[in-house]
Image (tube, rainbow, N blue to C red):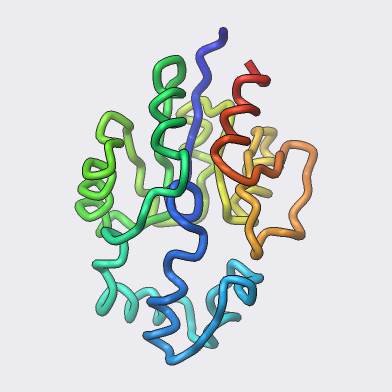
Length: 186
Protein backbone atom coordinates (compact mmCIF):
# COMPACT_ATOMS: atom_id res chain seq x y z
CA UNK A 1 0.00 0.00 0.00
CA UNK A 2 1.33 3.40 -1.00
CA UNK A 3 1.27 6.07 1.71
CA UNK A 4 -0.67 8.88 0.03
CA UNK A 5 -0.53 12.59 0.77
CA UNK A 6 -4.16 13.68 0.88
CA UNK A 7 -5.17 17.34 1.08
CA UNK A 8 -8.65 18.12 2.36
CA UNK A 9 -10.51 21.39 2.07
CA UNK A 10 -12.68 22.21 5.11
CA UNK A 11 -15.75 24.23 4.12
CA UNK A 12 -18.05 22.17 1.92
CA UNK A 13 -16.11 18.94 2.34
CA UNK A 14 -16.02 18.03 6.01
CA UNK A 15 -18.80 20.57 6.66
CA UNK A 16 -22.01 21.03 4.69
CA UNK A 17 -21.52 22.80 1.37
CA UNK A 18 -24.48 24.97 2.35
CA UNK A 19 -23.50 25.76 5.97
CA UNK A 20 -23.12 29.51 5.39
CA UNK A 21 -26.36 30.04 3.44
CA UNK A 22 -28.68 30.63 6.45
CA UNK A 23 -26.22 33.16 7.90
CA UNK A 24 -25.86 34.98 4.57
CA UNK A 25 -29.63 34.91 4.07
CA UNK A 26 -30.09 36.57 7.46
CA UNK A 27 -27.33 39.10 6.81
CA UNK A 28 -28.74 40.16 3.42
CA UNK A 29 -32.43 39.48 4.04
CA UNK A 30 -32.66 36.78 1.35
CA UNK A 31 -34.28 33.35 1.22
CA UNK A 32 -31.84 31.48 -1.01
CA UNK A 33 -32.31 27.72 -0.73
CA UNK A 34 -29.71 24.97 -1.15
CA UNK A 35 -31.27 24.19 -4.54
CA UNK A 36 -30.87 27.82 -5.63
CA UNK A 37 -27.23 27.83 -4.55
CA UNK A 38 -26.07 26.94 -8.05
CA UNK A 39 -22.91 29.05 -8.12
CA UNK A 40 -19.92 29.22 -5.80
CA UNK A 41 -19.81 32.97 -6.48
CA UNK A 42 -21.59 34.55 -3.52
CA UNK A 43 -21.46 37.96 -5.26
CA UNK A 44 -23.88 36.57 -7.85
CA UNK A 45 -26.14 35.01 -5.22
CA UNK A 46 -26.30 38.00 -2.88
CA UNK A 47 -25.44 40.98 -5.11
CA UNK A 48 -22.72 42.23 -2.75
CA UNK A 49 -19.01 42.73 -3.45
CA UNK A 50 -17.04 39.75 -2.07
CA UNK A 51 -14.65 41.82 0.08
CA UNK A 52 -17.59 43.70 1.60
CA UNK A 53 -19.47 40.46 2.12
CA UNK A 54 -16.56 38.77 3.90
CA UNK A 55 -15.97 41.82 6.10
CA UNK A 56 -19.67 42.10 7.06
CA UNK A 57 -19.96 38.34 7.51
CA UNK A 58 -16.94 38.16 9.83
CA UNK A 59 -18.14 41.15 11.80
CA UNK A 60 -21.52 39.60 12.54
CA UNK A 61 -21.15 35.83 12.02
CA UNK A 62 -17.58 34.86 12.92
CA UNK A 63 -19.15 32.39 15.35
CA UNK A 64 -20.64 30.46 12.40
CA UNK A 65 -17.28 28.77 11.74
CA UNK A 66 -17.45 27.20 15.18
CA UNK A 67 -21.06 26.10 14.72
CA UNK A 68 -20.50 23.96 11.62
CA UNK A 69 -21.32 20.28 11.90
CA UNK A 70 -19.08 17.55 10.52
CA UNK A 71 -20.87 15.80 7.64
CA UNK A 72 -21.84 12.14 7.89
CA UNK A 73 -18.99 9.62 7.88
CA UNK A 74 -16.23 12.25 7.49
CA UNK A 75 -14.81 11.80 11.00
CA UNK A 76 -14.72 7.99 10.91
CA UNK A 77 -13.29 7.82 7.41
CA UNK A 78 -10.67 10.49 8.12
CA UNK A 79 -9.68 8.54 11.25
CA UNK A 80 -9.35 5.42 9.11
CA UNK A 81 -7.38 7.21 6.37
CA UNK A 82 -4.89 8.81 8.75
CA UNK A 83 -3.75 5.35 9.91
CA UNK A 84 -2.14 4.72 6.51
CA UNK A 85 -1.82 8.11 4.83
CA UNK A 86 -0.63 11.67 5.44
CA UNK A 87 -3.60 14.02 5.74
CA UNK A 88 -3.54 17.82 5.58
CA UNK A 89 -6.32 20.38 5.80
CA UNK A 90 -5.72 23.02 3.14
CA UNK A 91 -8.28 25.81 3.24
CA UNK A 92 -8.80 29.20 1.61
CA UNK A 93 -9.72 30.57 5.03
CA UNK A 94 -7.75 33.65 6.04
CA UNK A 95 -5.10 33.52 8.79
CA UNK A 96 -7.35 35.61 11.06
CA UNK A 97 -9.54 32.50 11.28
CA UNK A 98 -6.68 30.38 12.62
CA UNK A 99 -7.86 30.21 16.24
CA UNK A 100 -11.52 29.50 15.49
CA UNK A 101 -10.52 26.94 12.84
CA UNK A 102 -8.02 25.11 15.05
CA UNK A 103 -10.44 25.13 17.98
CA UNK A 104 -13.20 23.71 15.80
CA UNK A 105 -10.90 21.03 14.38
CA UNK A 106 -9.75 20.08 17.90
CA UNK A 107 -13.32 19.98 19.26
CA UNK A 108 -14.30 17.67 16.40
CA UNK A 109 -11.40 15.26 16.84
CA UNK A 110 -9.13 16.45 14.02
CA UNK A 111 -6.34 17.82 16.23
CA UNK A 112 -3.67 15.48 14.84
CA UNK A 113 -3.99 16.81 11.29
CA UNK A 114 -1.95 19.83 10.19
CA UNK A 115 -4.00 22.75 8.87
CA UNK A 116 -2.92 25.40 6.38
CA UNK A 117 -5.01 28.57 6.11
CA UNK A 118 -3.99 30.15 2.83
CA UNK A 119 -6.17 33.26 2.73
CA UNK A 120 -6.66 32.57 -0.98
CA UNK A 121 -8.38 30.15 -3.32
CA UNK A 122 -4.99 29.45 -4.89
CA UNK A 123 -4.05 26.06 -3.42
CA UNK A 124 -1.65 24.74 -6.06
CA UNK A 125 1.59 25.87 -4.40
CA UNK A 126 0.69 24.35 -1.02
CA UNK A 127 -0.54 21.14 -2.68
CA UNK A 128 2.78 20.86 -4.51
CA UNK A 129 4.77 21.54 -1.31
CA UNK A 130 2.83 18.75 0.40
CA UNK A 131 3.36 16.47 -2.63
CA UNK A 132 -0.40 15.97 -2.76
CA UNK A 133 -1.64 12.81 -4.48
CA UNK A 134 -5.35 13.44 -3.92
CA UNK A 135 -7.13 16.71 -3.11
CA UNK A 136 -10.66 16.61 -1.67
CA UNK A 137 -12.48 19.77 -2.72
CA UNK A 138 -15.91 21.31 -3.40
CA UNK A 139 -14.97 24.64 -4.99
CA UNK A 140 -15.25 24.32 -8.78
CA UNK A 141 -12.49 26.80 -9.64
CA UNK A 142 -10.08 25.27 -7.11
CA UNK A 143 -10.85 21.82 -8.47
CA UNK A 144 -10.11 22.91 -12.05
CA UNK A 145 -6.86 24.66 -11.05
CA UNK A 146 -5.62 21.57 -9.22
CA UNK A 147 -6.77 19.19 -11.96
CA UNK A 148 -5.06 21.30 -14.62
CA UNK A 149 -1.82 20.89 -12.64
CA UNK A 150 -2.20 17.13 -12.94
CA UNK A 151 -3.51 16.45 -9.44
CA UNK A 152 -6.30 13.96 -8.79
CA UNK A 153 -9.27 15.82 -7.30
CA UNK A 154 -12.19 14.22 -5.52
CA UNK A 155 -14.97 16.77 -6.02
CA UNK A 156 -17.83 16.64 -3.54
CA UNK A 157 -20.97 16.87 -5.67
CA UNK A 158 -22.90 20.09 -4.96
CA UNK A 159 -25.45 22.27 -6.70
CA UNK A 160 -22.73 24.85 -7.44
CA UNK A 161 -20.19 22.59 -9.15
CA UNK A 162 -22.38 20.51 -11.50
CA UNK A 163 -20.77 21.89 -14.67
CA UNK A 164 -17.22 20.89 -13.77
CA UNK A 165 -15.60 18.05 -15.67
CA UNK A 166 -11.95 17.13 -16.13
CA UNK A 167 -10.03 13.89 -16.60
CA UNK A 168 -8.35 14.43 -13.19
CA UNK A 169 -11.62 15.16 -11.37
CA UNK A 170 -13.68 12.36 -9.86
CA UNK A 171 -17.11 13.40 -8.64
CA UNK A 172 -18.05 11.88 -5.26
CA UNK A 173 -21.32 12.09 -3.35
CA UNK A 174 -20.06 11.56 0.18
CA UNK A 175 -17.24 10.30 2.37
CA UNK A 176 -18.10 6.66 1.70
CA UNK A 177 -17.42 7.34 -2.01
CA UNK A 178 -14.16 9.09 -1.04
CA UNK A 179 -13.05 6.12 1.06
CA UNK A 180 -13.88 3.68 -1.73
CA UNK A 181 -11.95 5.72 -4.31
CA UNK A 182 -8.85 5.94 -2.09
CA UNK A 183 -8.95 2.20 -1.40
CA UNK A 184 -9.17 1.49 -5.14
CA UNK A 185 -6.54 4.12 -5.98
CA UNK A 186 -4.11 2.35 -3.71
